[in-house]
Image (tube, rainbow, N blue to C red; front, side, top):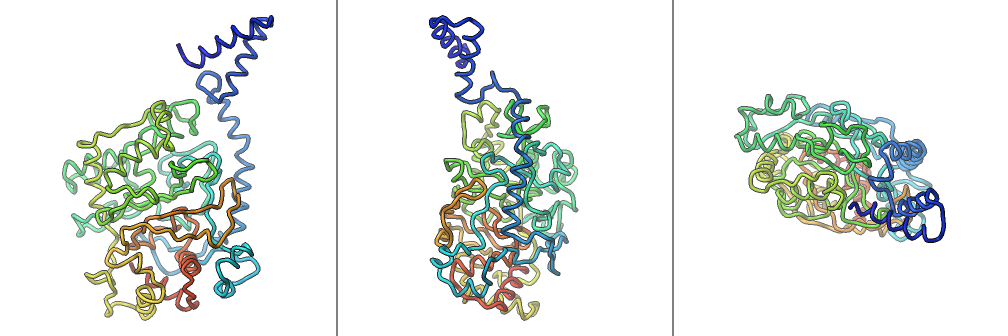
Length: 459
């Protein structure tokens, strides 16, 4: 017998002894059982949808106000282009209150914290109490099954990666962008890659573009999408579009309570062959571990019981995970024409600002302490202790707390991957340089910051 129904019948018997009428007994019993939380017996999809829609506009307005108070969100781009031709956003975009960048640079972490001046505190999820996978409109335009009725993506498209990022393969660098400007999906992957990949790689790619049930995208009554048909679910490449990223956002699955969970933006899969840690904070040791973890746990917010209810896809390590990782391991960084075989500038091709930026990167700015050439990652994790600069307060439903250890992301091709840091709080490379200038207390001059960004553009 269903556990909820058994509890309801037992409660009916207890209440009947009090002399209440049968209809009253059933009504009170159902009310008591329902108080333990929604179940698939007493709350319908229509009720859940109505409750979410009732608060959607108000919460979206509050989050938009939070973003507007922190950032200048009007489009601003420069001459630098991403690998596929989209203009790189420029900044800094962070709004300063009662000070300037030079003024901030003169203050200690304690003074910045006390005055509430830190411009880059942790970034909340659009509706932090709700959470779940959330996709930008540019991806939903291609894959309408990813629309959520209760939430819309929050960051403007000009600070996101390209809609169809180029795909570069370590096995066929001569082909350049294999995607030819297309978003790779289950409908076109074979046409694009047949004859380029071996059979295992091709099967791995098929699995990477095949959608499977997920916490918000499934057939149960508590899903966050209208669809409950054969098109439900999420594929790996829905977030890691073309093996790169669209910066789809989520909450980490291994922190509780909800308000302490960190927002996390999708990292790129380019260059996983040179990486030894996977996941922003989980430090999974192989791409196979990461692939299994995503399907078994991250897809369902770390709730294995809910995963079983919603149809978790348990991947087989030898014939599925292995094939998927074999394809991911040939995803290359974009070409960098100005770098030599050591990952350093070719002086004959470099502009003066780029040369000065490289000297800062390996010198005064101390970037190379965590991002050494040639791939610009040390394959380690570091705790920057950014909480030195801000108070632990509640903002947008999230506690502005400790970030903890975060993995060192590779900086090769970094201009293709805005916004930055694990939660996207730095919208541009200029924001990122300002962030680290404060965190590391580097005291860089304005001209030095510009030179450093110039060097980052050519990586």
